[in-house]
Length: 341
Ligand SMILES: *Cc1c(COP(=O)(O)O)cnc(C)c1O
Image 1 (tube, rainbow, N blue to C red):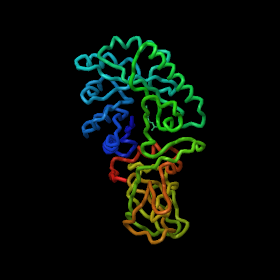
Image 2: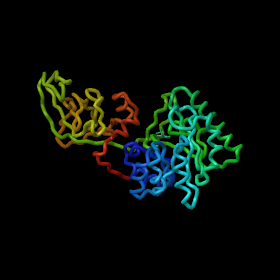
Image 3: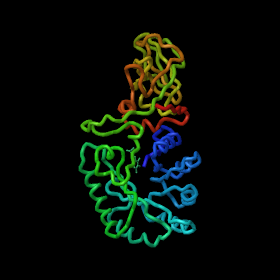
Image 4: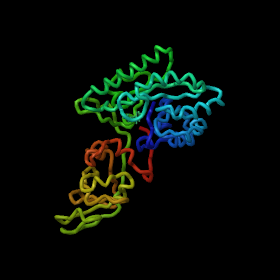
């Protein structure tokens, strides 16, 4: 089950879903009904599970667009079951158990009661049982092992009741790589599909390759004197005669303001530091030490250029966040261009 929420982690949900379907992936996961509906409108026919954000008012769309809800509490079931009565086949749902994420799902102590209540909703069928791991990319393995054990106990309970649930899933990217016994019948990788992981350094795994590069252009060049300042609030004051390149990319495009005076980009394979505050639509970099930069030169914000590369892990470090946030922040006005390898 490929996770394509948040516009496929910034990569473009429609194109990524299409590519995944061509590779034979038949299950996708999104966070909201709105994301699922958008994929249907784009002609994506794969099975789609909605992981979060479900209210009574979404029930019509779940049916109309053939989206499978993850059920986290009993609140949605009466409306859902009533709607499903008019359908020819029982409507598939996935039940989520909270084994230690502290977010969505039935507490294990209530799960028995849920299973008892299920037969009264005859128009619904439990297609999936799932849980979500809180610390599969953490240093310690204890919490993950306890979550998996608790999940297995819940599954045993289902088995004892004679329940046949075809899709059992728990593993996100980190668990997919690091906990083979978390795979069950289905895995739910997100970030790994896009070539990143956030596993501890001690876990050696280098089989992933980022699939996205982000490029900009030198839009203007200016020569400044010592004492001249760059951008809002004058946080950069030149100490030497400098050449500054203006790039038409800013925080509205997902280039975080936290990269102000911290980040780097690549021009002609060389690193140029961000100077001054990142603006909404523009960023300035110091190209004084780079040979003959010209207007129109390609700028690599994410990706490889010559012998150097800047990947999202590094940008995340500079801006005090995780690769996930850097990727899904890439804004809607950045054109996505797709090429085959
Ligand atoms: C986002 C998400 C995933 C994917 O997580 P990654 O760490 O990106 O692999 C899997 N399951 C659920 C429930 C999620 O919300």
